[in-house]
Image 1 (tube, rainbow, N blue to C red):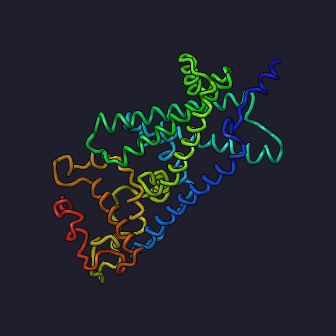
Image 2: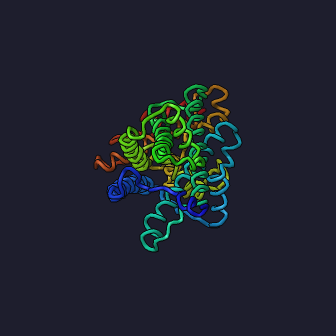
Image 3: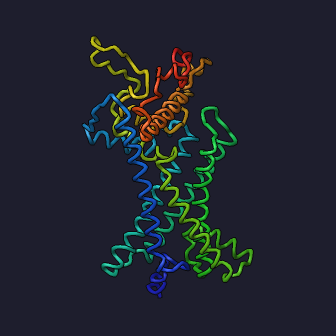
Length: 366
C-alpha cells in the first residue's frame, strides 16, 4: 500500500492546460531567449565599439577568480556586511537560483529522461523533497521582495532611487512569485492532493480555498488564465533583463571575475605619458571597454555614496550619480553610433563630459 501511495506522489506538468500546449510554451521560451541574447549582443557592441582605448582582459589566475565569484557573487560576502540589505539580496538571489534549478530539473525529466528512456524521477519521496525545497526557496524569495519594497518605499534610505523602473521590477517579481503559489494551491485543491502538504505555499492557498468553500469546478478556468499570465510574465522578465537595470544579474558576476583581483581604487598609469596630448578622460570614448562594462555592472545600491567622504561632508558629489550619468551617456553615444550620426561617439561639437553639461565641474573637484 505504501508503494502505491508513493507512486501517486507526483504531478502532471501541464495539468489543466494540456500537454499539447507544450510546443507553444517552448516557442515563447525561445522568443524570450532570443530577446535576451540579442540584448546582450547590443551591450557587447557597446562595450567593444564605443571605446577608442582598447584594453585586453585576462582571466588568470582562473581558479582564484572562480573562488571570488562563489564567495562574493553566490555567497554574497560583501553585501552581507550590512544585515538588512544583505539578507534581502541574498534571499532573492538564492531563492531564484533554486527555483531556476527546479525548472531545469523538470525540463530534464520532460524532455530527456521521460521521452528517451521512459524514466520519471520526479515522483515518490524524491518529489516531496523536491517540492519542499522549491517552496522554501519561493517563500524566501517572497520575503526578500517584500523586504525590498519596505526598504525602498517605507524606510527610504537616501542612497536608493525610487524611479518608476524600480517599482515596476519589484512588483513584477512579486506577481511572478505569488501567481506561482496560487497556481500550485489551485491544483492541490482541485485534485484533493492533501498529501502535498510539503508544498507549503501552495498548501496554504489550498487550505484558504477550503475554508472559503470555493467550488473546484470554478477554479479550473481561473487556473488556466493565471497559468498563462504567470508564464508570459516570467518570459517577459527574462527578455527584459538586458534592457533594464536587471542586467546587473549578469554583468555583476562577470565583473567579479574580470576585476576581482584588482585592488579597489587603484590608479592605472597613463600610457605614453611623455608623448600624449590628452591626460585622463574628457569624453565617454576615453574610457576603456572594461570601464564602460563597469557602468553596466553597477547595481545602484548606493554603498559608494554612503561611504564617500565628499558626500558625507555635504560636497556636491555623489559617486553613485556619477556612475549613473556616465552609463546614460554611454547608452546615448551608442544610440548615436547605431543611428549613423557622425562618428556616434559624442555630439558633433563635443567639448567634453564636463563642458557638455553631463557632469558639473564642482562635482569633479569635490
